[in-house]
Length: 208
Image (cartoon, rainbow, N blue to C red; front, top):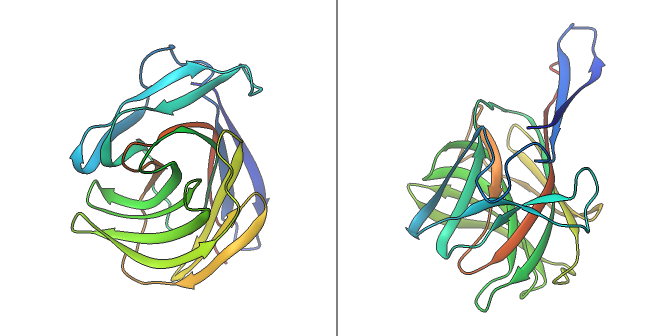
Protein backbone atom coordinates (compact mmCIF):
# COMPACT_ATOMS: atom_id res chain seq x y z
CA UNK A 1 0.00 0.00 0.00
CA UNK A 2 1.41 3.31 -1.06
CA UNK A 3 1.55 5.93 1.66
CA UNK A 4 3.28 9.15 2.44
CA UNK A 5 4.37 10.16 5.90
CA UNK A 6 4.79 13.88 6.23
CA UNK A 7 6.46 15.72 9.09
CA UNK A 8 4.36 18.87 9.44
CA UNK A 9 5.98 20.65 12.35
CA UNK A 10 7.92 20.48 15.56
CA UNK A 11 6.75 22.65 18.43
CA UNK A 12 8.78 23.86 21.35
CA UNK A 13 7.62 20.91 23.40
CA UNK A 14 9.35 18.62 20.92
CA UNK A 15 6.25 16.61 19.99
CA UNK A 16 5.73 16.35 16.20
CA UNK A 17 2.49 16.42 14.27
CA UNK A 18 2.25 13.79 11.56
CA UNK A 19 -0.01 13.17 8.60
CA UNK A 20 -0.47 10.27 6.20
CA UNK A 21 -2.21 9.96 2.83
CA UNK A 22 -3.24 6.62 1.34
CA UNK A 23 -4.23 6.20 -2.32
CA UNK A 24 -4.48 2.36 -2.58
CA UNK A 25 -2.36 2.22 -5.74
CA UNK A 26 -0.34 -0.80 -4.56
CA UNK A 27 -3.31 -2.89 -3.50
CA UNK A 28 -4.62 -5.76 -5.60
CA UNK A 29 -7.64 -4.86 -7.71
CA UNK A 30 -10.90 -6.56 -6.85
CA UNK A 31 -10.15 -7.17 -3.19
CA UNK A 32 -10.08 -5.21 0.06
CA UNK A 33 -7.03 -3.03 0.83
CA UNK A 34 -4.26 -4.52 2.93
CA UNK A 35 -4.05 -3.26 6.48
CA UNK A 36 -7.72 -2.37 6.79
CA UNK A 37 -10.62 -4.08 8.55
CA UNK A 38 -14.18 -3.88 7.21
CA UNK A 39 -17.62 -4.49 8.62
CA UNK A 40 -21.05 -3.01 9.23
CA UNK A 41 -22.80 -1.42 12.19
CA UNK A 42 -26.28 -2.89 12.44
CA UNK A 43 -27.66 -5.24 9.81
CA UNK A 44 -26.54 -6.13 6.30
CA UNK A 45 -23.00 -6.42 5.01
CA UNK A 46 -20.15 -4.42 3.55
CA UNK A 47 -18.06 -4.96 0.43
CA UNK A 48 -14.99 -2.76 0.07
CA UNK A 49 -12.89 -3.39 -3.04
CA UNK A 50 -10.02 -1.63 -4.76
CA UNK A 51 -11.07 -0.73 -8.31
CA UNK A 52 -9.55 1.10 -11.27
CA UNK A 53 -10.87 4.59 -12.02
CA UNK A 54 -9.28 6.78 -14.71
CA UNK A 55 -10.80 9.93 -13.18
CA UNK A 56 -8.31 9.98 -10.32
CA UNK A 57 -4.53 10.58 -10.32
CA UNK A 58 -1.86 8.65 -8.39
CA UNK A 59 -2.37 5.31 -10.11
CA UNK A 60 -6.03 5.67 -11.05
CA UNK A 61 -7.54 3.47 -8.34
CA UNK A 62 -10.32 3.96 -5.80
CA UNK A 63 -11.79 2.11 -2.86
CA UNK A 64 -15.41 1.19 -3.60
CA UNK A 65 -18.19 0.18 -1.20
CA UNK A 66 -21.01 -1.62 -3.04
CA UNK A 67 -22.88 -3.84 -0.55
CA UNK A 68 -26.09 -2.95 1.27
CA UNK A 69 -25.93 -2.58 5.04
CA UNK A 70 -27.06 -0.18 7.73
CA UNK A 71 -23.66 1.51 8.15
CA UNK A 72 -20.71 -0.15 6.36
CA UNK A 73 -17.25 0.91 7.55
CA UNK A 74 -13.60 0.40 6.60
CA UNK A 75 -11.03 1.09 9.34
CA UNK A 76 -7.27 1.60 9.06
CA UNK A 77 -5.61 -0.87 11.37
CA UNK A 78 -3.01 0.40 13.81
CA UNK A 79 -4.26 3.99 13.94
CA UNK A 80 -4.90 5.78 17.23
CA UNK A 81 -5.73 9.47 16.92
CA UNK A 82 -7.10 11.52 19.79
CA UNK A 83 -6.86 15.05 18.37
CA UNK A 84 -6.20 15.69 14.70
CA UNK A 85 -7.99 15.42 11.39
CA UNK A 86 -9.36 12.95 8.88
CA UNK A 87 -10.07 13.70 5.22
CA UNK A 88 -11.09 11.83 2.08
CA UNK A 89 -12.12 12.45 -1.50
CA UNK A 90 -15.35 10.64 -2.39
CA UNK A 91 -17.84 10.31 -5.22
CA UNK A 92 -21.31 8.81 -4.93
CA UNK A 93 -22.18 6.47 -7.80
CA UNK A 94 -25.65 5.13 -7.02
CA UNK A 95 -28.23 4.50 -4.33
CA UNK A 96 -32.02 4.73 -4.19
CA UNK A 97 -32.31 5.28 -0.44
CA UNK A 98 -28.98 7.01 0.20
CA UNK A 99 -25.92 8.29 -1.64
CA UNK A 100 -23.53 8.98 1.20
CA UNK A 101 -19.82 9.14 1.84
CA UNK A 102 -18.31 9.61 5.27
CA UNK A 103 -15.33 9.42 7.58
CA UNK A 104 -15.01 8.01 11.09
CA UNK A 105 -12.62 8.81 13.94
CA UNK A 106 -12.06 7.86 17.58
CA UNK A 107 -13.30 4.44 16.47
CA UNK A 108 -13.24 2.03 19.41
CA UNK A 109 -15.16 -0.79 17.73
CA UNK A 110 -18.00 -1.28 15.26
CA UNK A 111 -20.53 0.09 17.75
CA UNK A 112 -18.69 3.14 19.12
CA UNK A 113 -17.22 5.95 17.00
CA UNK A 114 -17.78 9.43 15.56
CA UNK A 115 -18.90 9.80 11.94
CA UNK A 116 -19.42 12.74 9.59
CA UNK A 117 -20.99 12.25 6.20
CA UNK A 118 -22.23 14.08 3.11
CA UNK A 119 -25.32 12.90 1.24
CA UNK A 120 -26.01 13.63 -2.43
CA UNK A 121 -29.72 12.78 -2.19
CA UNK A 122 -30.29 15.09 0.78
CA UNK A 123 -27.76 17.83 -0.11
CA UNK A 124 -26.42 18.09 3.42
CA UNK A 125 -23.56 17.21 5.72
CA UNK A 126 -24.11 15.76 9.15
CA UNK A 127 -22.26 14.82 12.30
CA UNK A 128 -23.10 11.86 14.56
CA UNK A 129 -21.82 9.85 17.47
CA UNK A 130 -22.44 6.11 17.33
CA UNK A 131 -22.57 4.59 20.79
CA UNK A 132 -23.79 1.14 21.74
CA UNK A 133 -24.44 0.45 18.07
CA UNK A 134 -26.93 3.31 17.73
CA UNK A 135 -26.33 6.44 15.68
CA UNK A 136 -27.20 9.77 17.33
CA UNK A 137 -27.40 13.08 15.48
CA UNK A 138 -25.26 15.98 16.69
CA UNK A 139 -25.80 18.42 13.82
CA UNK A 140 -27.22 18.64 10.27
CA UNK A 141 -26.35 21.39 7.80
CA UNK A 142 -27.54 21.97 4.23
CA UNK A 143 -24.73 21.79 1.67
CA UNK A 144 -24.43 21.20 -2.09
CA UNK A 145 -23.43 17.56 -2.65
CA UNK A 146 -23.75 16.68 -6.33
CA UNK A 147 -23.79 13.00 -7.28
CA UNK A 148 -21.23 11.58 -9.72
CA UNK A 149 -18.84 14.39 -8.72
CA UNK A 150 -15.69 14.24 -6.60
CA UNK A 151 -15.91 16.00 -3.23
CA UNK A 152 -13.52 16.40 -0.31
CA UNK A 153 -14.86 15.76 3.19
CA UNK A 154 -12.69 16.78 6.15
CA UNK A 155 -13.12 16.73 9.92
CA UNK A 156 -10.84 18.52 12.40
CA UNK A 157 -11.24 17.45 16.01
CA UNK A 158 -9.61 18.38 19.31
CA UNK A 159 -11.06 17.64 22.72
CA UNK A 160 -14.81 18.24 22.51
CA UNK A 161 -14.65 20.49 19.44
CA UNK A 162 -15.48 19.04 15.99
CA UNK A 163 -15.41 20.95 12.70
CA UNK A 164 -16.74 19.44 9.46
CA UNK A 165 -15.84 20.87 6.04
CA UNK A 166 -16.91 19.96 2.52
CA UNK A 167 -14.90 21.07 -0.52
CA UNK A 168 -12.95 23.54 1.59
CA UNK A 169 -15.96 25.20 3.23
CA UNK A 170 -16.76 24.65 6.91
CA UNK A 171 -20.38 23.69 7.52
CA UNK A 172 -20.40 22.37 11.09
CA UNK A 173 -18.62 23.63 14.20
CA UNK A 174 -19.89 21.76 17.25
CA UNK A 175 -18.91 20.36 20.62
CA UNK A 176 -19.59 16.85 21.89
CA UNK A 177 -18.09 14.70 24.63
CA UNK A 178 -19.62 11.26 24.05
CA UNK A 179 -16.40 9.64 22.77
CA UNK A 180 -13.05 10.57 24.25
CA UNK A 181 -9.46 9.41 23.95
CA UNK A 182 -7.66 8.02 20.93
CA UNK A 183 -9.31 5.81 18.36
CA UNK A 184 -8.91 4.50 14.84
CA UNK A 185 -9.90 6.34 11.66
CA UNK A 186 -11.57 5.22 8.46
CA UNK A 187 -14.39 5.55 5.92
CA UNK A 188 -18.14 4.95 6.09
CA UNK A 189 -21.27 4.68 3.97
CA UNK A 190 -24.97 4.15 4.58
CA UNK A 191 -27.71 1.82 3.35
CA UNK A 192 -27.58 1.16 -0.40
CA UNK A 193 -24.99 3.85 -1.20
CA UNK A 194 -22.48 2.87 -3.86
CA UNK A 195 -19.56 5.20 -3.17
CA UNK A 196 -15.92 5.40 -4.19
CA UNK A 197 -13.13 6.91 -2.10
CA UNK A 198 -9.65 8.20 -2.89
CA UNK A 199 -6.73 9.88 -1.10
CA UNK A 200 -7.67 9.04 2.48
CA UNK A 201 -5.69 11.28 4.85
CA UNK A 202 -5.39 11.56 8.61
CA UNK A 203 -3.07 13.25 11.06
CA UNK A 204 -2.39 14.09 14.67
CA UNK A 205 -2.09 17.51 16.23
CA UNK A 206 1.17 18.48 17.86
CA UNK A 207 0.81 18.69 21.61
CA UNK A 208 1.49 22.00 23.29
